[in-house]
Image (cartoon, rainbow, N blue to C red):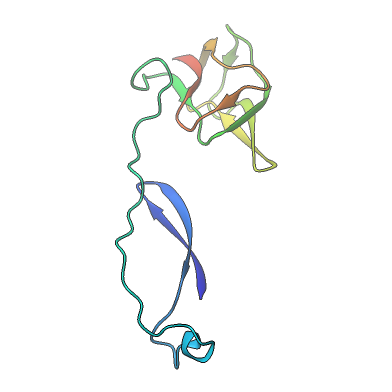
Length: 129
C-alpha cells in the first residue's frame, strides 16, 4: 500500500493505493481474498463557495482555505502595497497569512477574529490603486 495525494479541480485528496504489479500480492499471504471488485470513485463536485455576494469581484480577497480568523492586520481606509499582510488564518494548527494581491485601499473587512471561514469566502474588499 502506498499513500498518495491526488489533486482534482484544485482540491487535494489523500488516498491509499494498493500496487498490484509489484511482486506477489501481500493480501494473498495474509489470507485476504484474491478477488477484488473495482468501484468507480469520483471526487465530490466543487462549486463556488457561498459568501453572500455572488461571484468574486475585482478587489475582493478570498480565503485560500477553510479555517479560523486569528488576526486582522489592516483597518478600513488603510492604503497597502501589493503583498502586504492583510490577516492571518489558522487551519490544522498552522497559520496561513493572507496578502494583498495588488496595491490599493482597504474598503471593507468582512470577518472578525475568531470567525470560521470557508475556502473562497471574501475576507476583505479593496479598491485597487
